[in-house]
Length: 273
Image (cartoon, rainbow, N blue to C red; front, top):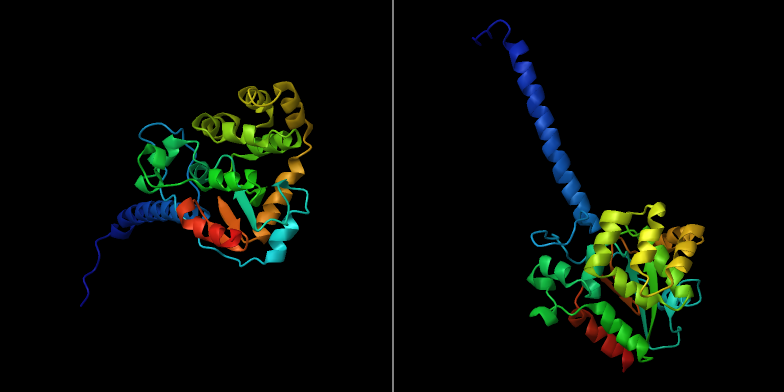
């Protein structure tokens, strides 16, 4: 015969059970956020100083097989582009200037590369990682490849930075501004100060004054002329199957993540034969 529970036992047990349920829900919530972050390729914005380590900076699985016609069509659209669709190698870079993976793939923020682990330590720092963006640019500058640069909010704080890139592109200063934004100082400015705040256009323009006229840049940022381009670029990236940043294409070959150029070079070499 089952023992009878003492009087008031259930009433005393209920708060314990409730508390345990809350704790369990909290733990599950944290786990869900971590999984969700990994799936998106995201890292919490941080100041890249010693002791801050971006975790899980790894490739994303390719989702969509694009066609050659899709890639070629990009060069006839109103996008940031260098070269045309007649070159043997057509490259696409889908990035977010606030994204740590994008900084890693650009190779101008060595602090972030080091903090991401040995896998991403640059050759110049004694590692084996070769940032792909500079290598693609070398081919573009040599007339061997063409490049389209597309925005997608892979990290969430890059809107003002991307609008600065649009403004710079119209004045033939894209790479000058790009290279400042992709430094450690640029990363921290976008993620810890500007953070998509339109009222911080002056601070962003002042930071970029060595590359462009700060007054003209501030005027361009404040005009809102490129607000809708953020949306159209994001939709385009999605149509190409890019789910996180960075995302690269070399012709129709997709490299979804911060791949080393060593892993991409064979595709480029084959295309240029």
